[in-house]
Length: 225
Image 1 (cartoon, rainbow, N blue to C red):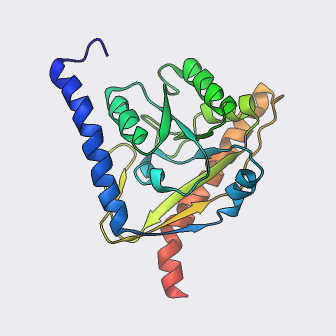
Image 2 (image 1 turned 180 degrees about the vertical axis):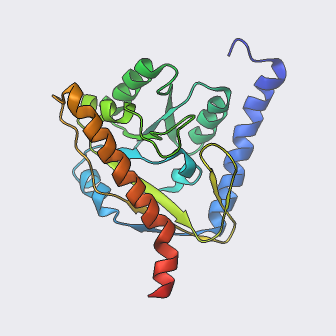
């Protein structure tokens, strides 16, 4: 933070608190439900830890995803990442700074240490700058190093604003309904060969796209039935 100005440092103290406060108020107006939580819950009940993978686009409401135990999240080293890291701390989420583009190796080591200390891990495998909905290799490597299952998850909302950003970031609107949908776990063997990594990367991408489509279609299909 050596290159941050005094005004920046003041904002770092204020903005994350305001962000967390507004997000909690928003969550109070939203009705939430969860589908296929058993995919993750079976590991929780056995005292095991998982890697929750979700698109950067669906980051906003993930602090309210039901879970058991500590959570550590990989957050980029960009300036916006500092604000996010401080904000999620108000929800009890630890952070490791880094991404696939900046500080990736150190971030992976930090996530492995969090996991070894007894924490679930959370990662946006297409962040921090995309391409949108394209999984980077880091999540597969993290699963290989920890032997933790990757469990994809997404949420959908009845009313939302979609921003014109690289990830088409989603903001659920007040008084909407939100559904979280868990996907089937994906296991990565510790002895995964380099030539097998792409196959697993594509599998994670396909599963994550599938639960995202299910979440987006959930309310239209349920209202029709």
